[in-house]
Image 1 (cartoon, rainbow, N blue to C red):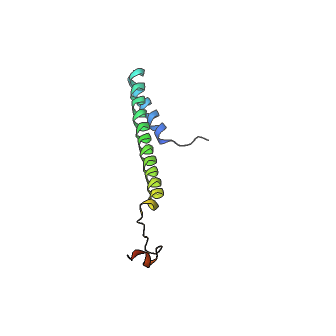
Image 2 (image 1 turned 90 degrees about the vertical axis):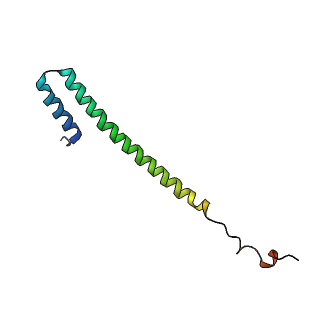
Image 3 (image 1 turned 30 degrees about the vertical axis):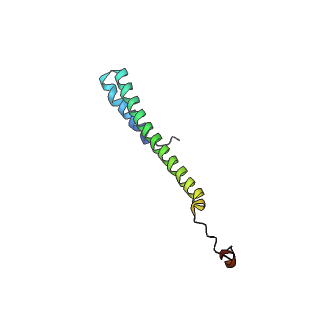
Length: 83
């Protein structure tokens, strides 16, 4: 059983509609140009998604390091006074 792929179908339709002009090189060129644009857009969105995911992981792992440190509870109050 063959899976339905709208991207492949659109390229096949473009190739068949271009075949009516009987210029195979031009038809193939149009199909490849369309395929490259669609694949490039998909790759770009995947890259942005991975970049965003890496940014979120970095922020999540780095957030405990930017919390303010309070030493009030650890030091004895008499140690703060001058003798």
